[in-house]
Amino acid sequence: MRIGGLQKLTLLDFPEHVACTVFTWGCNLRCPYCHNSSLVLSDRIHEEGLMGEDEFFGFLRKRQGLLDGVAITGGEPLIQPDIMEFIRKIRDLGYLVKLDTNGSFPEKLRGILDEHLVDYVAMDIKSDLDGYAEATGVKDPPVDKIRESIDLLKNSGIPFEFRTTVIDELHNTEVMAAIADLIEGADRYFLQRFEDSGELIEEGRFHAPSEEKLMELLKVVRTKVPNASIRGGEIIKE
Ligand code: SF4
Image 1 (cartoon, protein in one colour):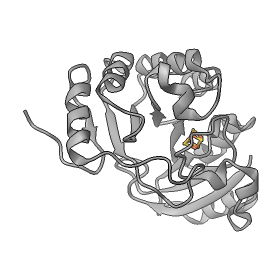
Image 2 (cartoon, protein in one colour):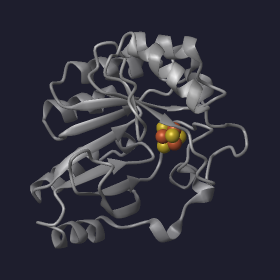
Image 3 (cartoon, rainbow, N blue to C red):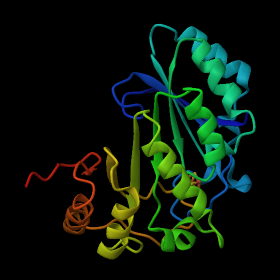
């Protein structure tokens, strides 16, 4: 397991839980607006964030009774060969688990869901499927696998959310309408306004949408996903 960092306390990453967030290192995609480039590109690794499993599980043992959950994010956690064993070890210590994924590995996701190893899953929807190559920075993105992961989650019975980081240059009403078609039937869908972390894979190319545009996109999405909302923002009631 390649651990690229640990946030010792989060009240936001795992809904309704007091958790820590563990960052796995490595990803199959290269989203140009990725704000965690140090977890994706080997020439940007933060050596000080790297952590052995023993240290991580030692931390979890010390926090038993204080934290109730572990959010696993990346990078892309499912790229790790031993992810299932890693999650089992976390659960054996009594923690609930939230998993973030980009949806590229439905075979692994299926195994994790079948074994009820996670209590919540958050899956990124980068764009409509036609826009995945531009949004993910890879020539041949695994769109069939993305679609398969969407269907798996919808039919899993395990709480999940879809979420899209909205970028002015990538997302318009047509794209959002196509995303809404793709995830129709989902209970939770969040639009997250892009923010420049200062550590993007490609600096200076992308910008946040205006509040007005974000609201317009939310209205489009809500025609198919009525509970969609803006994370951290006001919900339009109409
Ligand atoms: S934003 Fe894209 S490149 Fe960055 S970790 Fe997520 S899927 Fe990987």
